[in-house]
Image 1 (cartoon, rainbow, N blue to C red):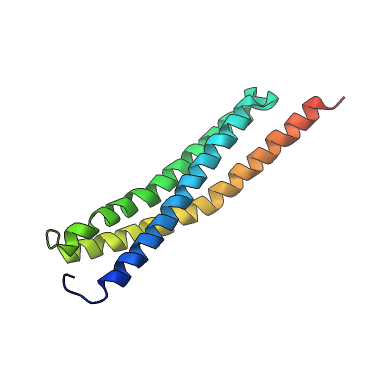
Image 2: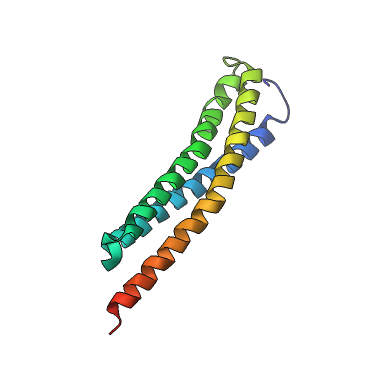
Amino acid sequence: VPGSDDIGAHLVTSLMSAAALLLGYFCLTLYLIGTRRLVRRSRSGGSGLEAQYRAVTRKILIACCIGAVPLIGLFATGLPTYIGRWEPGAHHMLFFVALVCQLIAQGWLFGLIGRGERLLGEVAIAEYNEGAP
C-alpha cells in the first residue's frame, strides 16, 4: 500500500523469502542435472533404471516450476502494486495462489526426491554388482 510505514519490512521479507525459495529450486535443478548425467554414464544406464530416473527427474522439475513460476509472478507484481498500477487485491490473491502452489510443490517434492534417491541407490548397487568378480 503506497505511503505505508511498514513497506520496508514488507519488501525485505518478500525479497528474502522469495530468494530463499528460488535458490532452493535452482540448487535442486542443478543437483538433478548432475545426478541424471551420473546415471546416464553408469554401466547400468541401458537398463530400465535410467528411464525410471529420467521420469522422476522430469516430475521433480515440473514440481519446481509449479513452485517457482507463481513466486516469480508474485514478485514481479510487487512494484506495480506499490506504485499504484496494479490492484492490491489482485496482488494479494496472487500471493495466496503462490502459497497454494508452494504447498503442492513441496508436498510433491517430498515424495519424488525419496524415489529419486532410491533409484540412485539401485544404480549404485547395479554398478557395484557389475564390477564385482
